[in-house]
Length: 199
Image (cartoon, rainbow, N blue to C red; front, side, top):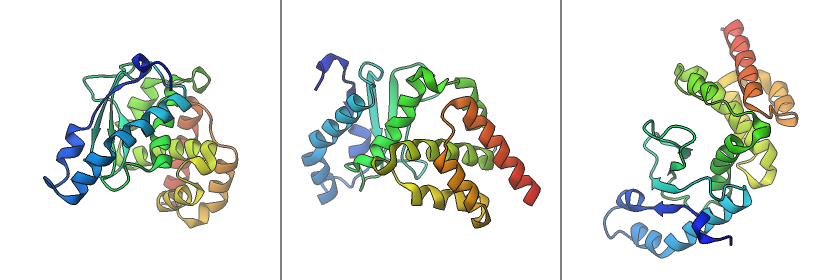
């Protein structure tokens, strides 16, 4: 492990409070807490994020899904982040790697990260936001291959948005995923046009 000064402070207090007090699940998490933190440190090092995250608050997902994000009061490039994680999947290495890969993409200059693109689509109508996030997720998981959340999960998400009749398009995107933020936006716009033309 790299120098500890480059590792973030991890606050699990909110996550711990999401369990029933002194429940078997809470006790198990307290036993596994250090293992959970070590897994996060391992993935941060693996994805070249050392020194890029200074503090990390762990919460159960208020939105019903796992995600790594910044609070509005701490916009990019703040190194203060939050990780929402399911109470039954906090040791799921592929899930955690998937979430941190999104952050690695923001720091990677080859990805041409543009916070304006993220703000535009992240704050857009729910359906447009879902299409954009699906494209981000396909790109991340296709590059991670069997170290991410997998092709079939992404296919299911894609079918929910586009319909099974667009499976060939999914295969094309999976095989040649958009690899930077301007491309994420371009593919999102293309898919939204297809949806509108079919509605």
